[in-house]
Image (tube, rainbow, N blue to C red; front, side):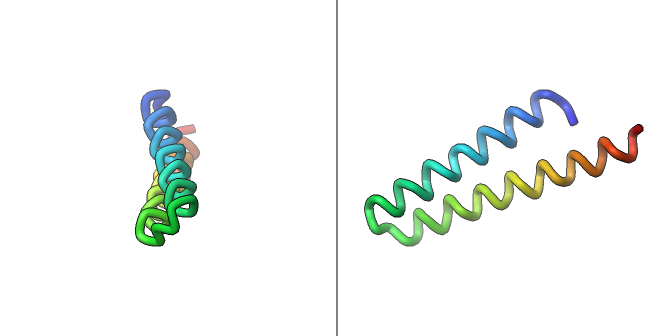
Length: 57
């Protein structure tokens, strides 16, 4: 997994957390759900990169 990919995935995860917390604070369920979705997407990308790394070694 490239270092750039790790940073991008972590940035996506943090953006998702921020959206989720903002949605909770403002009672915006749609924004909260978007944030959760962004986090799940980042987690899936990270898992995929780990699988690719495992097969490279």
